[in-house]
Image (tube, rainbow, N blue to C red; front, side, top):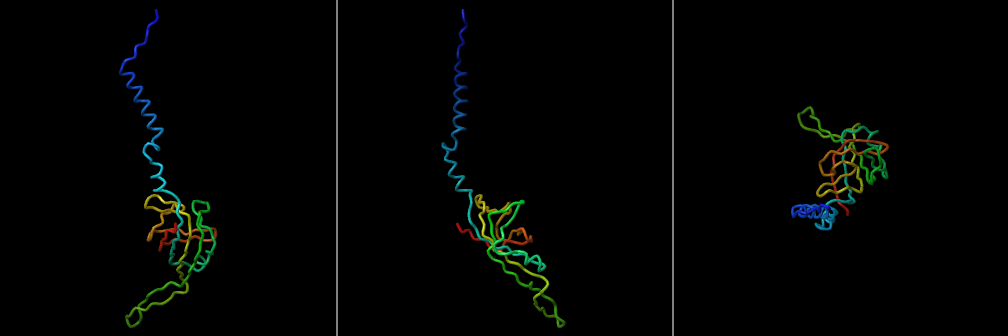
Length: 159
């Protein structure tokens, strides 16, 4: 005589709950339409931004060339230098009569470098090569030929 296994109602409920939990987990993107929300929040955008570096020697300021690719994390990024503006630093000193006098220092340079790049966008945040792109934030401008530290001066989202 064989012993029959009796199914308890609790056993059936537990099996049904487990099957439903697995189905909801596997089909959660279709069930909640979260795939579209993620694409809207994150993705690639084309931006143009300008970074300004101060207190540079002439060799560091003139090391950048239009067309140079931006590098970060030891690899090329999707960014190209489109504009370079180098000028003498403007300084102020006190004259003999006590008034303030502004003058250009020919030994110290200021560089404004315009870059067009494909950036990662995560909600309100934009980053290129692991660096946040927002006006006023510090930024390392780095290519194969030169590297300087500056600040983001201007950002425009093109796409």
